[in-house]
Every structure is written in C-alpha cells, then in structure tokens.
Length: 344
Image (cartoon, rainbow, N blue to C red; front, side, top):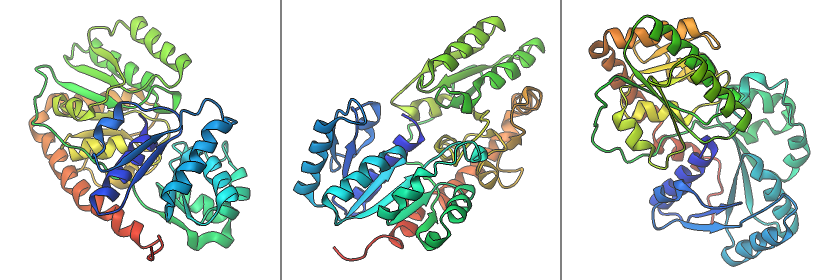
C-alpha cells in the first residue's frame, strides 16, 4: 500500500465519481486498499506470479478485448506489460504515471529502457518537477507529451479522536528511502531530554533487511515505550484522526501522498527538504522543513511541536486549506482532462 498504489485507487475512484466507466486492473492480488474503492469501480485481479506469467497476461488481453477502454493508465513498473499489451492488441491511448520516489537520485537510476518504450507511450505524467525536467531532457522530442500533475489525497476522514499522549504519525513504508532510522535517532535525543511523546510507524514491510535494521535500532536505543512499529494498515484515516502531527524523515521523495494526507487531516507537519515537499510546505506557516539525514534538526522540530502544540495547530489548519485548494481531486481532473482524448 505505497504511494503509487494509493494514487491508482484515488484516480480510479475519482474518475468513477466524475461519470467515467472505471476499471482498476491489479497485476498481482488484492489488499487493504480495495475497501476504499467505490462500488462502481470494476476491480480485476490478474494474480501474476512473475513477469513472464503468460496466463496472467492472456487474462489481461481478454479483459481489454471485453471492455475496449479508450485510455489505459499504467502506474510505475506496470508500464512494461502495458506497452506489451499495446504491441499485441493496440488501439488505445496509453498514459504512463511515473511515481519514482528517488527523484533526488536520478543519476543512480537512469531507467533508459523507458526511452525505448516511449515509442508506444502517448503521454507521461510525473509527480514532481524534477522528474518532468529529467524526462524532457532525456527525450526532448517528446517534451509536449510529458506533464507534471501533482498527486491528490482522497480520504473519508472520521471525527478526530486524539491519543492522550502527543503522537507523531510516520506514514511511510519501511525501506531505506523513507529513513525511519534518522527518526529513531531523533526520538532518542528527545527521550534523553525527558520529553514525553509517542511515534507510530505505519507502513508495509517492503524491505525486510531495512525492517530488521529499524527493529534492531528501536531496541538498541531503548525506544520500545516511545515508538510503536504498527506495520501496514488499511484504514489510514483512523491513524490520521488519532495523531497530533505528521512526520516524514525521507532521504528522497517525489510528491509523497502521505504529506498530502497529513495536510488534508489538518495535522501540523515536519518533513525533510526533499522532492516536492518544499513546494507543498512553501512557507514557514504551513509546516516545518528540516535537512535530510539530520536527527538533531529533526529532534528540534519535534520539540517545537511538543513545546507549543496549540500555536502550531494553526500550521495544520493553513496546510489543510492549501491542500484542498491546490491538491484536491478537482485540480487533478482539470489537468488530466487537458491531456486525454476528448472523443469516445
């Protein structure tokens, strides 16, 4: 249940709400996010076991021939099968949505195979300006077909039920990019200063080696009473309702859906200066930005919220207004409709 998965659900639901016949094809299996889809979205599970699963790919071909979609919107690595589908059956508008989170390290992950695939891709949507500039430089003859459209949150928020103890929510899958260990080191600084608080780490165990490092660090720093490793949850909205603040300690990001969800829930936010996070938190009254990989700066920011939460709640309220105004579903659809075919 990462950002790309959440956005695939968000877009499928938003399109259905806006009057489109919407189908969500899941390459492998279902999961907790299915509960967030409106009943009008048609969900199809391919149960793919490997990239070379011919049976699953044949089922994809059958789905296409049955429903004949005008647009096929592929997220992240699904583009490989989407291009293969277009080669085999053709005649649909193919949009690739690049959610690549390591946008601050593009030199290490050039992904030049996409240049070859771009022959069959009609449009590329990217989630931040760095990715847009990267692809426009790599395939300059396709500049007009590469568009930045920001992610958008899509949640049904329950009534707020704050935890008794001040709670920071870290909504991020467990992998090195999200750098939960820097957050744990910041927590240790605050514990040594006798601060009282709680941190919830909510996310999938994507990288087992990193997950083990996080667990070991949590124990080594004696943080068991302060940090809860919650793991994956399907109802993120319930976690948002209980938290006092949102926090991201990532080394690299695109436009994190978690940051938008923090804002939509009205939480004051602490975030590292990576990806498009500074664009969202564009002024000090919208949130606190800190350097990446700096436990000391992160601890100072956390202490600021702990020391004067009533004043800093205003940051969350102002961020909520900005998210609704600039990153809502309507903004996404307005931009989306400008790049898709207008005939059916």
